[in-house]
Image (cartoon, one colour):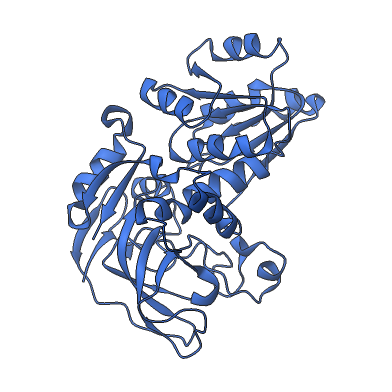
Length: 348
């Protein structure tokens, strides 16, 4: 089969690789029908994720058709249409049982993000899914691939690591720093909790326009006057919750600067370099700052809202390519600001 293989920082290739095979009884082999590229994949190519080895097939999102299952798989069968979760969960370890499968202990990495990280991923014609009963979701009738594919990662990440971790509650004023796909997922789902105002912040006018379409009440250009503009919108106090959805030191610093005393900062972005944290100035503000990897435990709930039309997840895909045109798709996504891209959809 063909797959996108990481060959070290700055090096990747769409090339022939062996077909995946069932290794454990709980495995499933899924043929990829639709997939997408994540910002984390860009970080991997840049060399920001040292735990990804050269030779790895990258990617952790996708919708596909079950081609084969191991003898221990009971919830899925050949021919089932499924969403592949970005988090692989065994369902039985302490962390999985506690609802935190991002730290699944069933593997030597002690983490649930395996696909495209510690094992081969979804930017391929097929993929092996360990612990399939807990790591796949049935796609119901009426839900398209273009809706379902963003339930692999982007929607759960923006919702769980942004909105839920940020403790958004009715009446809150929320700022989302970075209105790419995950930031927009936070904006889409912040409204579910009755935020009174949602401010989208970005350097790109196209993304700010999209933020308004996704439910933001206001937008602010991320320039030297960004903080002053937000303060003017919030009676000089700042926001209740700031969600950082980029992964740069300066964007986290921006998010921290926007919250009022006793505010909350939810870091969603994947950071590849150290970030200065001015504790000496922040401790007296009584801030709560969270960070982490998605658990993807909200996928079933979000799927219901996508199916009902409450969450128009398909709007996150702005460009569609054939899977074998992945190099072009990658270039478009990597230059998202110029190309006016949110997420690229890759169809087999």
